[in-house]
Image 1 (cartoon, one colour):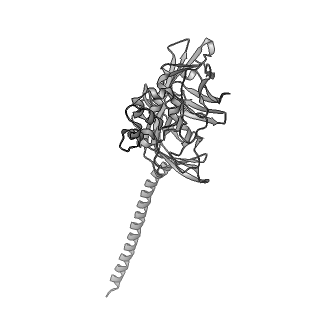
Image 2 (tube, one colour):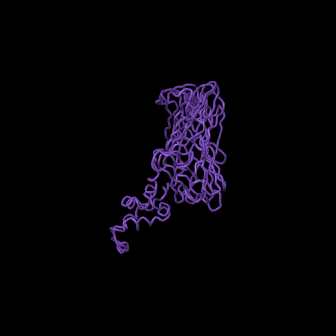
Image 3 (tube, rainbow, N blue to C red):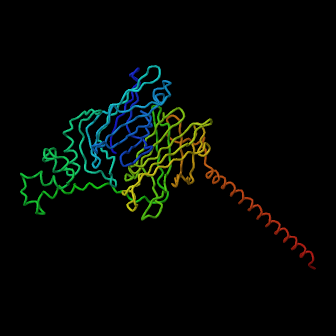
Length: 459
């Protein structure tokens, strides 16, 4: 599923109170792939906060129907004391493509949700505008979409742009040059042009180029063939070893509230020729091939702040930081790996691997207004995945962080041991030097006495 979305949750009793956001920074919490039912559940960390579930079911006509459900707690956004969990559902199902095709719609569309009753007469209204949509819920092969079927106006869905523009847009993805010359040809039979990439080359130039020219290598008809193979991006094989140290930040009106710096690397199990092997992934946001993005939330609640790092386009790491009596600590990490052929061409099958770890309060604890630091390599085992950090330092629940303070640093035990080695080594060296000087003095004194006795015994 690929789409852009604008979300708005309105408190109807006070129209000035509303939460707004996009899907940027959201993390996939779970997913289901069954023969007749599939779903994706997203965790929304900022703006509209809660869980947004996309559910897909096969209808009797083999068409795919989509239903959305938002689960939220109003108090986390409006601070109105309404702490009960609320559920907003779509007015009706959205009819998508047939089960063997993908569904596309670039025009903005508004999905309608039923109003939700709150406490003390409050009422909440949720709306969602989506665009640039591409969905395939069943019969997905590899990491590519099947030929697309274009969107149409349906119950529960209000279009904000003409749907007639969709067929040329979809055909343009396969052959930009030919569709621009004859936009009316693909609009008459969009499914035909979708399924055969060579079809637009033959039908778009019948009046200017005779058919005989197509067999000649010099004919201009051959030039549009270059963009007709839009291959999926193939990522370079991640190299093992310490990855680059990157800095990730979350901010609000008070400036940066959360700053996390580290080199991050994973070792995870995959099947290659039916044999379990390990693969290494490193996150480097400066390497554009990683397609790394990050987004954080300073106001997830009074007790937590979050940071989501998206790497290799579809894999995510959600980090949660929690307040304690004396400060705060790195409390949870949720990681979703999208293992595909673009990332690891030799794996037996593409799959999604999700792991989660909750840490002890004193494991990564920092004092209030201070930071936690660990220059040494930290390695954690999380359900078969090794999560490693290098030169880690973070600060949270603060205002306008521009750099880490030199005071108030809580060090990991490995760094503390390393720091204590230097004075111990210096002390040991000094002690050894004192012993050597003392021994040399005793030897010299004994030798001096011996020479003195020999001198006295001489006639």
